[in-house]
Length: 220
Length: 277
Image (cartoon, rainbow over all chains, first blue to last red; front, top):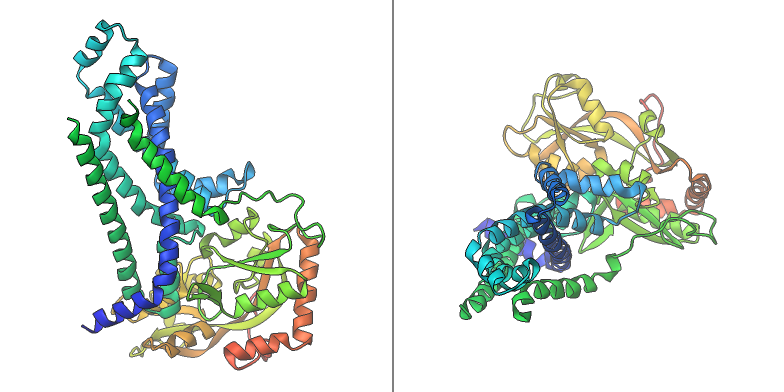
């Protein structure tokens, strides 16, 4: 009961800072998702293309990204690229998160595209469509529908993973929580409160995804 | 057909919208040619961008979303003396020197103590305060009464701090934190840490906040906190030293120091105590 009281106190004291940080967290997540989805699509198409070179490039990217921790990638981008271009923490973090997600999303798309029945493609080519046309009009729309649930999952992971960019000094939710705890000496309560913020964000996200899935199902 | 792509479009639109609100964060600053009128090579024109961890109460911490503390105010006073606008930022302590060298900000004003090892990579200004490295233990502990008792004990410190080096001299069992406050907090949890080494003032602040810990003995050494700069910024170093001299001379320094500590931090009897460098 005593804990509940202090948690409420911490919540009321910290919400201005946390709300601002929520926006930053969402911004990083959004940039990462757009970049990740675009990269994912490009690399998925490369992976299923007939060109050996494109396949190799895509495989290399996916292997390297999936084989190294996100926090290492963030650090690498923040400190490693500065010799070429100075990135602010926000952009370094968002881009790293995007590149990281691209590899996972590429695999989601590839699986979905390859999961579409061969007959679909055969049928469209017997209608006289080119490979590209059948991909765009027949295969991909169905694949996209199938990839919504795993994509949604990946999006939620991204939102939570955005907390890792605290390490390069971006003022998102987790780093604000660190500062709040350092200031008030109330670590337990502060991390509890910030956990609730993430939880609420993920729940809103899940709900929106559900809506979208239902919308897609109408035209089944 | 359009409808099928609406999902991606929706994502893109959201992102544009969201990224649009954050335009204040979207700067990939080109370092060249800024601060021309001041002659300093600054991250942002007319601003002194200085960094601290923001996790080191009472020297630098955040209150109601505002960065504040002794370091932050001294930084502001230095900037004003140089005719610049103060722009304090926070960055994790473990990588603060790398960030400085990568030109993510102009200088570190974050209670960084002068050490020979650090001086190989960065330049230090004249010290702007002295503080003591102090041992803190759990309130009920009577095992540790002096530095000798630290032999083989489990000590908590912030990685890359001067206390880190000291702790390694006493024991192999060092636990690393990214904030002194978290380390001090862990003292109050049964069986996690035997002692924490940090600045006396920081520990006293925690005690004042009701943390059940106590200090042991005399300060282990005195350290000099100074502004850290990149080696190539020679004019900036001169400017900062001059500003420090001025704020000490005109009483600004004393005013800030009294506000935070009810004493002047530069008024320390250095006779017979180890000065770390």
